[in-house]
Image (cartoon, rainbow, N blue to C red; front, side):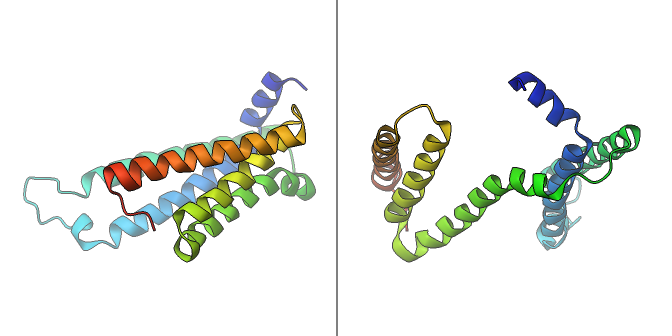
Length: 172
């Protein structure tokens, strides 16, 4: 299957639209909960000034409307195509790699406070650059791992020097 056809299929897949709508809907729910739970943002005691809550409410309104529109598009597409539930094994295989990345980011964030920014960033970056390089199957394994190591040292080193030393951002 060509790359263009794969992109077209994923855009027109009703279940993909429903998944996108649920993802953004969850973010909208968290955002609304945060904005409405904050007295300073949800207060109307600013007179004619709309106050600091205007921008978050506008952005969340647009995102909520977009999520609902994508959900309706997915549900209508599902009804038009007459597709049932997709194969759960295919969904699990398709979602496994992004879920693994997301969970490793959460692990990385907790490791920053346990072993420090530099060490955890070196581990996280080397592992993921190596994994993604090995998935490409275009180069030898030793070349990919060498490039991942060098790229990690350069990237983390630049971040540490620029933010930690030059700008003075405290890195844990």
